[in-house]
Length: 276
Image 1 (cartoon, rainbow, N blue to C red):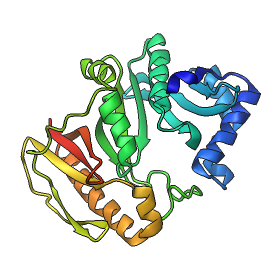
Image 2 (cartoon, rainbow, N blue to C red; image 1 turned 135 degrees about the vertical axis):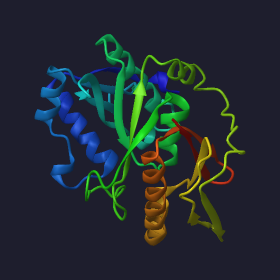
Image 3 (cartoon, helix red, strand yellow; image 1 turned 180 degrees about the vertical axis):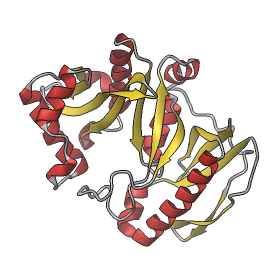
Image 4 (cartoon, rainbow, N blue to C red; image 1 turned 90 degrees about the horizontal axis):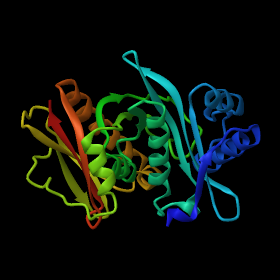
């Protein structure tokens, strides 16, 4: 359980150095330009940013979350740039707990919005963001970070959703309260705009439909995208380009991404888009 980890603000140079070390260990960065350096971290926290570390019982830092002060249409907010947890502390709920501590710190500042980017083909990140935190998405950015030295990002463009976490909304409060409950999936009657075809152990995006106007639509994605990028880069790229076409088309028409459901036995995830 994540309760075994202590979470507290990080404010010193040495603590920031530990964060840089975690960045390299979590993402496998080999290029210095991919890492948020110590001077940027320390200045951020002195001027409205949030940097929280999670420590195990031995006092070792095993995770962190970092956000900068930001503006959205002239409105003060937080931009969450990184959430990292070492492999030995994953699957414990620590990532969720770090986000909730970040939410509490942001609310104490009198702010009610945190935004961040994440890869829409990362099903477990989508599960955290939508099912447990209650984000929405209205923006899709193509190859926002360019080439990366992280092995987790190689082989496909770094396309990203911009997650909007409206901290005081009733939907966010409901999601947080229900975070540990079973996930219902009422999305099965929602029509899918991509057709999935199975070939042995692989799952292909066979075709896409860009012309539907239903109030709700679904986009299917595979679980295990990191493994797919390693095992079949061409198939991973095909998924990237197909979902890019779907999300950019429907978001441009005024749809929002409002939910996500995991089908673990099938190894699939399903986004729900709703018209505004």
